[in-house]
Amino acid sequence: MRQFAALQEKSLFISAGHSDSDPGAVGNGHTEANIVLEFRDLLAEYLGERVIVDKDGTDGKNLPLRDAVGAAKAHDLAVEFHCNAAASQAATGVETLSAGHHYPLGNALCHAIADALGIANRGAKGEASGQHSRLAFISQGGGVIVELFFLSNKRDLAKYIANRRRCVEAVGDVLINEICAPALEYSA
Image 1 (cartoon, rainbow, N blue to C red):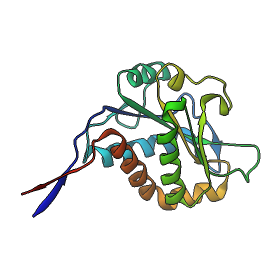
Image 2: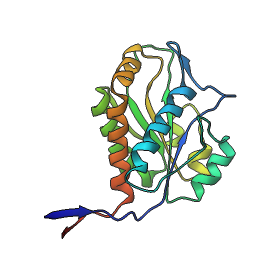
Image 3: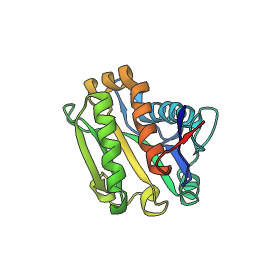
Image 4: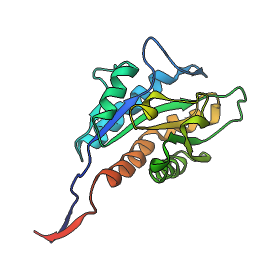
């Protein structure tokens, strides 16, 4: 019987943006903090069955930004999840913000999320492409920020709610491919 094994080569840290004291975007009856906290926990569960992963907090909580940045710096790859929002309820899609060397990963994440949710792929962008010119998780922590979808768009939110498990698996598989060596074939 042929089997395959992948070797984890990089450490991974995942983070949920915002917190109880800073809910982030609020729209359509949801807060960004609650959505990304649930997403982070589902992703940690999915990844935890396959690779070693560290996350920013436990029991439905997350670390303050300064602590998350410190943890991000201590890992080979750090990814923080957010939801976008805009004045226009028509704004849609997934995008990532990062330094240039993370654009290939950002594009892979965007493609996976867009396919899983059936929303637009806005692509990988630099940290200044968002509403802030510098983002501590990127500039100080060396991480990647994923804007999963637009919370201000009812269709994006509905697609996320209906397909969140599929989205978790898609993101998880991209991250596993990023931190693990290609699978080796062996006979058992």
